Image 1 (cartoon, helix red, strand yellow):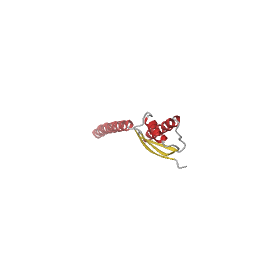
Image 2 (cartoon, one colour; image 1 turned 90 degrees about the vertical axis):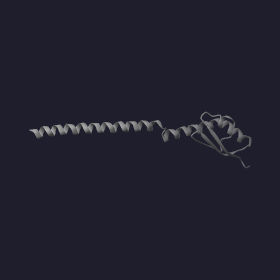
Image 3 (cartoon, helix red, strand yellow; image 1 turned 120 degrees about the vertical axis):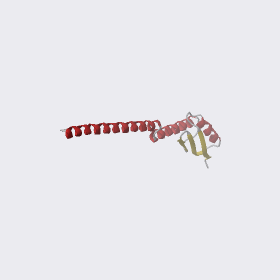
Image 4 (spheres, helix red, strand yellow; image 1 turned 60 degrees about the horizontal axis):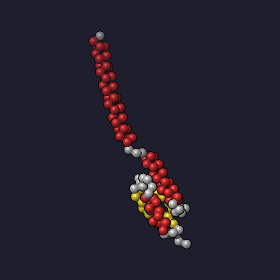
Length: 116
C-alpha cells in the first residue's frame, strides 16, 4: 500500500515539473516571436521598395520626363536612376523630381543622354 501512495506522489511531482517546464518554454517562445515581429519582414520591405520605385517613376512621368528608357530602383529609401534621356536638361530635372517624392532619402543618378 505504501508503494502505491509513493508512486502516486511521485507521479504528481513529475506532472508538476513537466507543466512548469512547458510553461517556461512557451513564455520564451512568445518573447522571442514578439521581438521578431517588431522587425520588418523581407516581404514588407520588398513591397515598400517596389511602391517607392513606382511612386518615383510616376512623379517622373508627371513632370514631362520621358521615362520609356529609365529604370528606377529603390532600396530602403535610396533611389537609383539608370538609363538614358533624350535631353541633358532632363538628367538634373529627374534628380530633383525624385528627391521630392516622399520616402526618398537619397538619389543616385546614373542617367545619360541618348545617342542619336
